[in-house]
Length: 121
Image 1 (cartoon, helix red, strand yellow):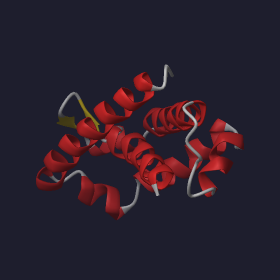
Image 2 (image 1 turned 120 degrees about the horizontal axis):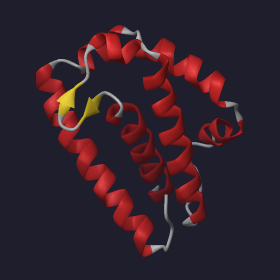
Image 3 (image 1 turned 180 degrees about the horizontal axis):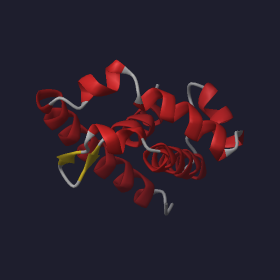
């Protein structure tokens, strides 16, 4: 269960963290560009590798595939995801403020966990 929660936190940090930058919601145009999708890809892969080094099993195991796929495939997938209505809804101020606070807390907790296990990202 612990590995599932940590893996889920990593995906939240990568996906939601890309929508909020320095406590500001990014605009819809910025959300649609490849650079944003690539940021998600790089963050997700880096944190997945880091938790593996810390001895955490990646769970659900579908995330193991993410580490093997080339970045351009994941970039394409995340570009499609960024164009969905769900993402537009996540960028609304009410949701965005609470989500940003959660992502900051998750990120701080993850970094603390990685430091305790002598893993750097």
